[in-house]
Amino acid sequence: MILLSVAEFLGRFHPVLVHLPIGILLLGVLMHWLSRKESFHNLRPAIAITLLLGALSAVFSCVSGWFLANGGEYDIDVLNRHKWLGIAVAVIAIVYYLLYTGKISFKTPAMVPYVVSLLLFLLITATGHLGGTLTHGEGYLSQGFSASGDAGKEVKKIIPDVQAAVAYSDIIQPMLQNKCYSCHGTSKQKGKLRLDTKEFILKGGEEGKALVAGKSDESEIYKRVILDPLEKKHMPPKGKPQLTEAEVTLLHWWISTGANFEHPVKELPQDSKIKLLLEALQSDHIATPVKPDIPDAPVAAAPQEAIDKLKTIGATVIPVATGSNYLSVNFVSSKAVTDREIKLLEPLSAQVVWLKAGGTSITDSALAVIAKLPVLSRLGLEHTNISDKGLPLLQSLSRLQYLNIVGTAVTVNGLVSLKGLPDLHSIYLYQSKVLPADSQALRAAFPKAMLDTGGYVLPVLEGDTSEVKKK
Image (cartoon, rainbow, N blue to C red):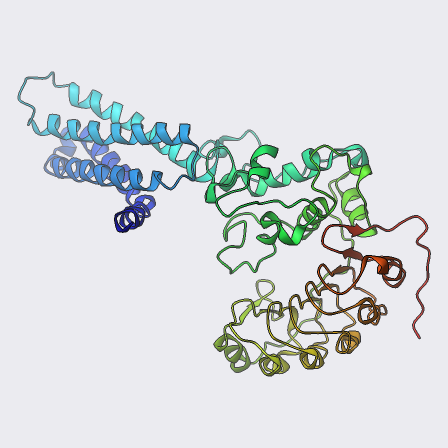
C-alpha cells in the first residue's frame, strides 16, 4: 500500500517533468543543426551536455508517466500509444547522444546523427500530440488551425423546433460535450467516469452512480455543477468552461423529469421558466426568463473585519462576479454553525446576495437575521432545523428567487406564507414535510415557480389560472 502511494505521488510529477525533455531535446537538435555553419561552431561544446540532460529527463518523464498511467483515468488505446512513443523518445534520445559524442564504437556515416535528430523531432511531436489528447480531449493541438477564427469557442446549437427535439440528444448531450467530455470522454475519464454515451452515464464512476433518474439532488452529475466554484469537487474544474445558469436549470429539469434518453421535449413536463429556456434554443438569442439575481445598483465594499470573522469559522466568502462588491457566503465547510454564527452576517447585510446555510444547525431564530439581508436572491436552508414558525420571517426578502428547504420540517402552511414574494421562481422541497396532496395548494400559491419535489417538477398546466391576492 505504501509503495502504491509513493508511485501515485511520483506519477503526479509527470505533467511537470514531461516538459523538460521536450524543451531540452529540441534545443539540442536546434543547436546541432546550427553548428553545421561556421558561425555557430561555438555551440558545439554545449550540445553534448544538452543532449545528455534531455535524454535523462526523458527517462525520468517516462518513469513518472508510467506511474501516472496506473490511475485509470485515460483511454487505454491513446494511453498505450502515448506511453510507447514516450519510451521511444527516451531510447532515441540516448542513441542520439551516444552517436553525437562518438561513444558508439562502430563507424557510422556523418549524416546518421542528423537523421536520428529528425526522427527524434517527429517522435516528440507525435508523443506531445497524444499527451494533449489525453489531458484536453481529441483534437486539442489542432484546434488552432480551425477554419473559422473562433477555434475553441463554443457554438450554440440552434434547434428549429425544440418541442419536437429529443431532450437528451439535442439539448443535454451537446451541453455535456462542450463542458464535460474533456475530462469524462473517450480520451480521459477522471474518477473512472465517462459521460459520452448513455451506457457509461448509467454505469457511473468510482464514486458510484452519476445519475439517479427523477432525483437531481441525488445525482452526482448535477450536485457537482451547483457546488461552490472554490470547492474541490465542483465540476467543471476551475479554469474550464462552466455551465451557464440556463444549462444548469435544463440539466436539473431533464433529470427531475426522469432522465429519459429517448423522449422528445414535448412529452416532458415544462413550467413557464423551462418553456422560455427551451424557446431560446430555437434562436441565437440568450433567454432571460427571470430578473438578474445580482442587483444593478452599485454597493460599497463589505467591512473586511466582518468577512474575516466569517472565514475564521470556515465560511467561504467570495464576490459573485469580478469587480463586484456583492458577496456569496457559503457555510458548507463550517463544522458547527448555529444561530449565533449566523449573526456574523449582519454587517454584510447590504452585500450578501447568495447564501448557502444548508447542513448547519440553525433554527428559526437564524431566519430573523437572514430576513435582514435585503438583496438576498438565493437561499439554501436544506437539512437545517427550520420550521413553519420561522419561514414567514422571510417575507421581507422581496428579491428572493431561489429557495432550498430540502430535508426540513417545513410544511405547505409555512411555504405558502411566502406566496407574496414577486420573484421567487425556484423552490426545492424534497424530503420536507410538504406532501404530494399539497400540490394543488402549492401551484395556486406559486403559479409561475418551479417546484421540485425530488422526483417530479410540478408543471404549469393550461388550467392554472388561479390568482393569488395579498391579504
